[in-house]
Length: 448
Image 1 (tube, rainbow, N blue to C red):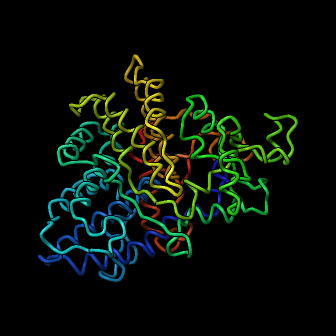
Image 2 (cartoon, rainbow, N blue to C red):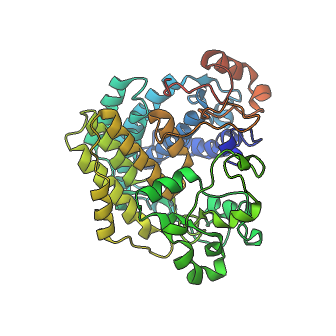
Image 3 (cartoon, helix red, strand yellow):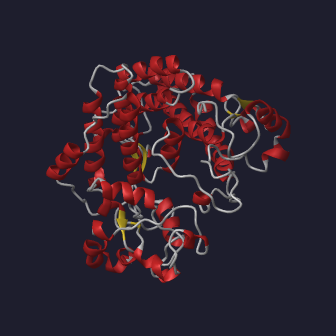
């Protein structure tokens, strides 16, 4: 995260990989092994497998070829050096794995109950989530295997994807301790804009985002952004009505530091940082904000694209409108119970019709809105993956000195350094097959 907008390397590039394989999967594999083949525990087994697929699709989307079939087998089968599967094999395995898990789900059998912090043991909700995840994975293949993408997208739609915000897959957070509060929000507050900085911290919202919201008179702008005084927790009730004024919001250009920014803002001084917007800690960046794993709005955006491709009988415009509406209505899931009036939503839809003359023009409209909606969840994974697949929103090249990509978009993360010693043979086989272990080597589905 920390130097991501400048395309220079952070020592944290392998952290996600290491966390999933060394912590996350170990517990999942224990659950899967303990429930395998037990008729009364089919739901426990299916849900664990759905969650395993969710976790590993994030990893393969970020890194490319990764351990999949042999992942998490160190304790159970003594596989301590798992082979890296090709992403072209991982995606079919994930899709068929979802289909199998969906077939296992049985509302008449026991589930996790209140121990299930996502759906509280509701088997029907897990089935809907699995079909919605299937749709996400299917659409990921549109550039590399459109026939397979169509087949699985149609399966997902026929099976039953999310129909309203009530279906959203989310983890509810409660401020108070590290085990219950929103961890992303806590880290953002602690490291990036502590109140002692008085608006001069290292993180501001990007000009790309703020400009797109302002150009559309987007009613989500005051929900997303505030000037720094609105992030003083003890004064939020007093300050936020003023500091979230859309006319006051300003995004900082990406790819600059305190010295190089003078190339675009000649009179720059760091005192000017107080005039640039920060994520609103009273709403999307609150310690009480939910973690959204997949939203209904995302599903409707994907259905809009599927409709453009002739894979869904409903109209693309209908799905597009439902997606934007769902995003704007979901503000009520956050602290403050902010309601965007329906009249404001209707006015926005009237001003932003899906009316481009070409397929690609409509794709740009859909996926620009996808990007704006996903900021609500601070879902950098999905926004980045969708950008690589679709090319939207269109971003300007980064020219920061010493950047590792020649100014082009990062298209993957590097494997952790630990893999070069702990799993050297399989690591080397993966890069020999996939390409150099660089940020500019695209993953399989990102056909360039």
